[in-house]
Amino acid sequence: MADVDSTDEADDVDEAAAGREPGDDDKAEADSGAATTKPPTRRPVRGLVTAILLAVALLASAGMAGWLYLNDYRPDQQTDPAAAQVALDAARTGTVALLSYSPESLDQDFANAKAKLTGEFLSYYTQFTEQIVTPAAKEKSVKTAASVVRAAVADIQPESAEVLVFINQTTTSKENPDGAFAASSVKVGLKKIDGNWLIESFDPV
Image (cartoon, rainbow, N blue to C red; front, top):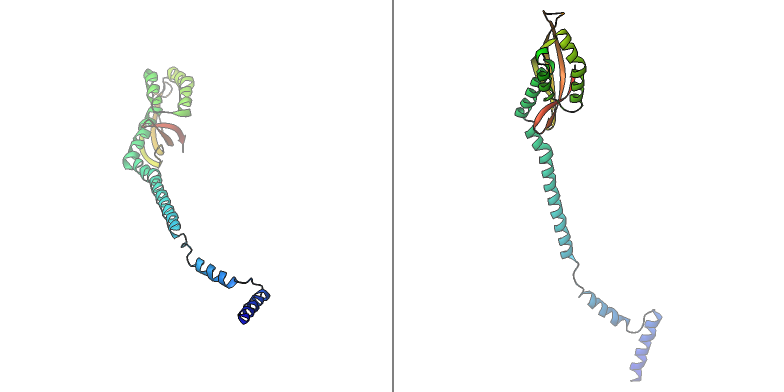
């Protein structure tokens, strides 16, 4: 018995000299056994996060597709050849109405023209015809007749358009009963309001 006790005491001394407490080896073995029984890494949680991110990406791509449809595809539908023709016709008829009037029917002629205008240009046309054109037309019997020779759409958007119009215009008066002929071109700016193309600008080019 004495030999066994001395051997155990010697082992304890050796462990103390090595900086370990007696029995540390047993604890290490226990700890290593415990380590092997730890739960697995959280792969299911990572998989769930990945699935959520994919769902968000799919929703985002669906939203982008909808945005592209509204901003690219539908405007194309609204600016197809048929829509361009409607804008072209509005520019033609509006131009003729603007530049054609007779002293016998001034009020009716100006009202017809104003029905085809909008915005600041409508205000300008109203003031111009009331203060300048009407007095001159009545005093000098000025009569004008305009016709559109050619017209082409320069630009068109769902709610706006620009049309280049080539015009022939004949003007007669007391001073010149034989009439004066003029050819000109204008850039007609159109705006769609309540489904109708109205002239918002009228600029010589």
